[in-house]
Length: 442
Image (cartoon, rainbow, N blue to C red; front, side, top):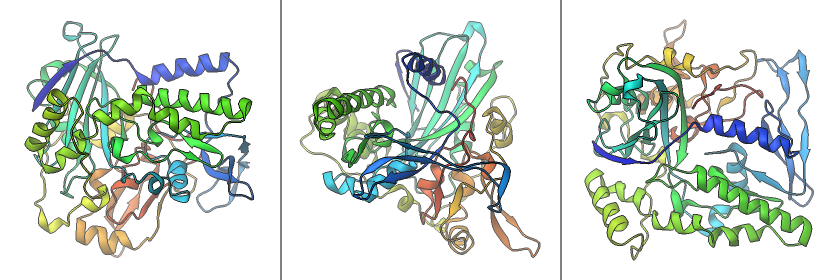
């Protein structure tokens, strides 16, 4: 395990609530509880807005007493800022071939699993940051952990696991439970209390994977486009700056008759581009393993200062990187002790996740036969392990046949299933508006 220390952190949940209030004071209309489920186009295939999904639909597709038709929100310019693996953004990228337009590589991802603890006053050091690499992950799996001491005796701790891992028996949630027992971390947490749990995927493709972000009628901003700085595990600053640049471009479209391509031009001339270019070889260097990755990234960062004479390429897309089960041995994880490590139901309760039970499942199988015919016999059912909320379980039916059960109400909206499924058979769609995790200090 390698350690890196640096600056200061606060809760992003608290920050965005504060910013939302400030935006409303300026006249911005915010619609919480409404999920954008479709893109609206005009006759010329220009994007003219989004449509929200219908509310009050039962599992069988019938309309309940509280049924409400979705609404159409239209505008001259639509900016998509859905976060990592945005469902509408991905459709736009494919429809308009935005990756091909810039010859960018596929996006590669990681899954971040996180808890917020309240620890003893004597152990709390506001502003203290700990970053690690390596253990508990094996040397072929890229990832690392973080610990941020926030205000009010709160500590944010998490593990980030690259989703191009090979072993289908690897369980990111259980790896995170192991992490908390490391002698450098355990003493900090002992005597403390977990306040909240959550998980989310993040972009790790960096500079090589940025698509052309402008489409007819709008643009893609933030992590939907993929502006995360991987070595810093930091993307809020670049997401905010991309939004500012897009807003400036949109203003010029509406008031000066320019076009949204100025957003792309300004993006390439901004510090975002410089920062991501200098960090471009960090993530793909670890395709060769932990030690070579550390050596290559150290040379580039400390000696060449991001001026490596060539740009490394990413390996296979994450879903293709998963090996068949027969190439690996099953991993046996220790049982949770209920003090530092916990089972999934306990953690799930701390996420405040809530979905209306009587609604169509928002996690859809493109082919319902693949789990039993492919995923289970060939990959040992990896969806039961890469999901950090136990959404996917293989259980025998009344005839003794093992079938995949989808517990959609558990979903943390992390998008790992949409990314890691070996056959890309799972499609994540938006549930009824207002459903999902209820983070307050994450």
